[in-house]
Length: 114
Length: 111
Image (cartoon, rainbow over all chains, first blue to last red; front, side):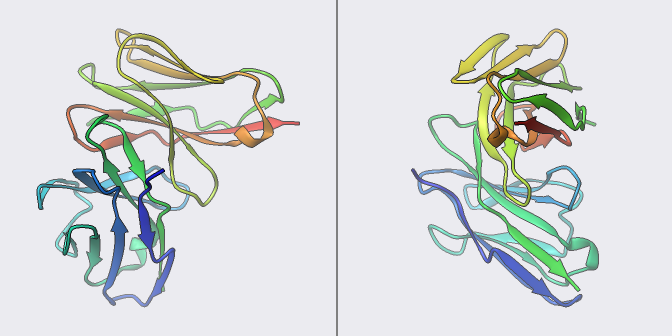
């Protein structure tokens, strides 16, 4: 069964460094999302992407964040200058065409900012 | 502000019992409702979706939706220790907008 994949599974970085989190959505999906979950807290929306552009973003998604679909398969989240409070699990999700509302999540990247 | 509320638990049930998980949401115009299961340190796994009032059954799981009361629930019959996880209620308020999640209810099934 097709699934969303994410790399790396765990990223450790120093405060102020740039990180790029990568996702490969399910191949025929059209809508892509990034969410994050700080330890012990709820899953929070960051950004959605459709037709090669951002369709919606939350207050969390400030100028330090960017997303890109550099080719036909990858979907990336970049954090330009990481802060301690960026430490969280980051999940990529995608939505298919037959049941457009069901979002399927990747395994996540655990980002630790030191 | 669109809100999804869940009792954080923990909810403890004996093996074989029915577990009942509840969720309320703030926006009366909400369209789609989902239950995700999340094991510790893992990502949310979609287990049920429901779009219209009433019950929807899938194996041991039954989702119930009451839009008038802005209430959605998940019943797990014949609970197993492997069902022990956090159950996240998520609401899609319109179209392909982002999911809004509740904080989740931690379920513990005692063997």
